[in-house]
Picture 1 (tube, one colour):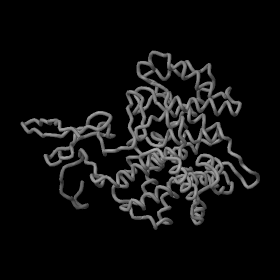
Picture 2: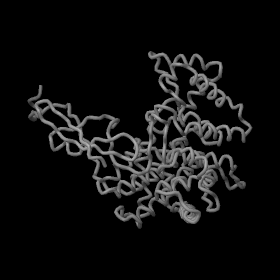
Picture 3: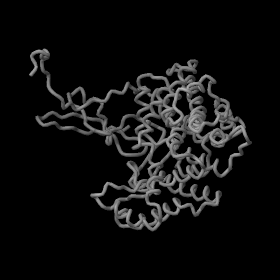
Picture 4: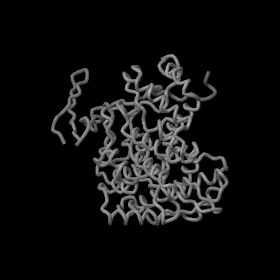
Length: 430
């Protein structure tokens, strides 16, 4: 940590000394924790300039297009590791040895079954209930079934809860889909990998054996890896804030799922598909480009640009490659939406307007096409995101609980309401 100081000078002559903290990567941080003692607070809607915690998990440099999990570039992990390795890396801090991976993989495989009584919860939902609505309820309810690991101050209890959540959230998501479609639930199979098991639970029926396609399994595994964690985003911050009160991890992850469900957070890939459908044909792309450039037109090209990445999204090229692999396997490289996406990307990247504003394709631009090709319905897209992000949420939660500087979250406010006034009896009010 740096010994440098910053000074805040307030009109009237008061000067406040503030320490400057330096991390291993990224910009320096001005420590404002003691501002309240001086009778002032900062005002930062959306926390755009506020660091809410210290973390060793994920680093993003949006200007340079860098995403690191525990120091490892996302490009290397998505190409050379599988999701279980990435989960081990995120939670434990290091890539596993062969023996560690086999042990961790075995634990997760043998935790995939949910308590049989959980299945009765689904009957309380309408058949057309959104999968995310179901997941918020069912994941939160897990705390009623697994009370043997409820001490959040115990690191072993936290680890057991992490294993259970990582294993059971895919099963709950698949059950939500099956309930929507009227098909019987498919039990997990311990012989299958994490991604293959999810596809099995989604698409198998008692009528015939389901054999997951290795290309689809690899694509699903890569999607899980690319979305596993993304620093202090809205849903992760929600998990941390909920957890700061000492709430159980199942409730915290349910809170994260609820936050992710918001269309401004987890619904971008679905919005891309809707946009591509609206464009309809490659020949219509130029007029949609012009609409996007018109400041008076509310239309925006979905899947371009990112709140964090002001350069390229490092995940986008990997998803583009995955899209080619999946469509080639299915013999669908002439897929209409994929062809529109390719041409839209080409034109936008050559247009001076998009270049000047650094509006590059992000990971969501292609992930929706991949999920659609695999057979995932659009109402399940955010549920897939939730499966991916569960490891990030539970890792961030565990780090927060372990942090000696952790306090219950309590943001301040700039109050703009009425000053103190006296109550007037009803009979005397005009």
